[in-house]
Length: 175
Length: 219
Image (tube, rainbow over all chains, first blue to last red; front, side):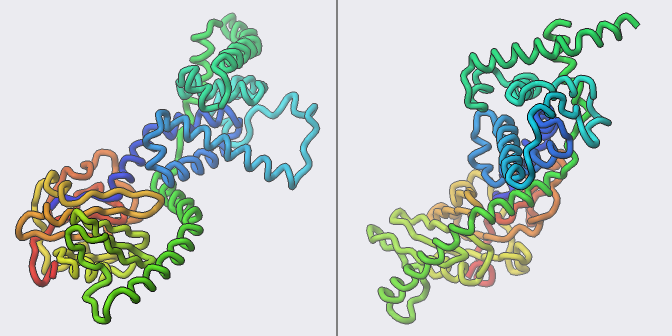
C-alpha cells in the first residue's frame, strides 16, 4: 500500500526549517540586535511560512521571505508599542545598547555593538547580503529599494564597521 | 582589514547562535495562524452550504440515495456541500473532494459509495479496520487514481474512479501521527515505504491509499 498526503508538505517544510532556521535567525539578530526578540520574530515568521507553505515553497528565495516577514513583524510590533509607550528622544539612541539579554553570551559583543550603531537599513542590507548571501538584485527586491541603493548601503556599512573595528583589531594583532 | 576579513568577522560574530525551537512547535503555531485566517472563510462556507443544501432539497426527490448526484455523461456537474467537506462529480467522471474539517467521515463515505466509489473513510480512528487489507500497488498507480494537495488549511482530493485497478478501493483516513513530532531527517521520505503501516515520515493529518475492495471494507 502506498500513501501520500499532507505529511509530504510537512516533511518539505521541516527540511526547509532545518536547513534555513539558523541562517535566518542570525540575519534577523544582526538586524534587531536582541537575541530573544530575534528568536521570537523568526519563530513567528516560520509559523507564517508554514501557514502559507504552498506559496512560500515556490518563492525564489524562501529564506529571504522568512527574514523579510520577521523584520516586518518586528516593525509592526514596534508600531503597536509606540502607541502605548513614549518614544525615546532620538538623541538618546545615538549610542544604543549593543546587545541585550542572552545574546551577549553567544555573539561577539564588540562587533555586534558596531553593527548596532549602523542605521537600520544598513543592518538589513548586511543581514541579507552577508548572512543570507543574497545577491544585490534579490536584496533590493526583498527590501523594496533600488539595487544601486543596496550597494550604497553596503559600502557605507562596511566603511563604518571597518572604521569602528580596525583600531581594536590592530591593537589585538600587536599584542 | 580588507572586505573579506570584515565579512568573515561579521559572520563569525553570530556563528554560535542556533535556533532552539522544535519544528513541531513552529508547525503548531502555523496551524494557529491558518485558523485565524480561516475564520472569515468558514463564515462564507456556511452561507454557501446553506444555499446549496436548500437547492438540493428542492431539486432531489425524497429518499435520494445520497447528496452526491450521479453524474451521467454530459450532464451538468452535481455537487453537495457540507461545512466539513464537499464532494463534486465532474463531467469526466472525476470526483473532487474538498475536506475542510475532519468531521463526519461516515457521511463522506456514504456519499462517495452512493456514487459507486469503493471507499472507506476514517477520521480520528485506526487508518484501516480489521476488514480492510492494504493493496501494495505502486505509487504510479495510486498517482493515477488520486491527486492530493492542500491550500489554506483545506485538503483537495481528486479521484479518478476509472483508474482504480480491478478489485481495489480507496482508503481516506486521518493519519494517526497528526500532531506528533516530526521524524528525524534520517527517516525515509514519504512514498518510500509500503505495507499496512504507513511509512515513517507521514505525520500529516490526512492521507490516502489503496485497499482491496470488499463488502466489509469499501461497501
